[in-house]
Amino acid sequence: MNITLIRHLPTEWNKKTWLQGRRDIDLAPVTEEFVNKIEQNQELLQKQPFDIVLASTLKRTHQTAHLYGYQPETEGLLDELDFGPFEGVPKSKLIHKYGNKWIENPKELILGESLKNLEARIALFLKKYKDYHNVLVFGHGSWIRGFVSYVNYGDINNMNKINVENNQCITLKLEMSE
Image (cartoon, rainbow, N blue to C red; front, side, top):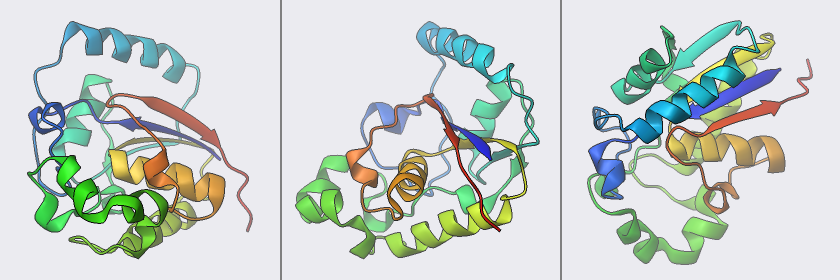
């Protein structure tokens, strides 16, 4: 399975470094820099026909997909981590409260959702889509970082050592077993 992951374009909250989680925030006005990056990413995407294109239930992923020219199917397993009381506040407050645990062992945290649940959603996503050859996902920062950590290390505990920028495009080749 080849899976291409694109983090949604920035929102005003991204620009302020506020955690969004499940808040259904619109994209910020798209700058020329991001239009250029979309065009660069589209050149890569055109080389691969996708079996399925997916986005979370949150509108910022659908808005990004539409700017890329796709009409994605909605998949709730892709929803961003629920940050609970940290939604709408700077990410630095979460890091200040949980410090090293956020970096080294996030799987043990419970915010608005347990990070074990995030990992379970990632595993369920892989199981659900294992028979597809080429998948395009418009997703969220924590979900994508968790996914990359899960695929590369077997769990999500390295997710916060990975950086995924808004509109970053990552393609992974996975060997799926029955």
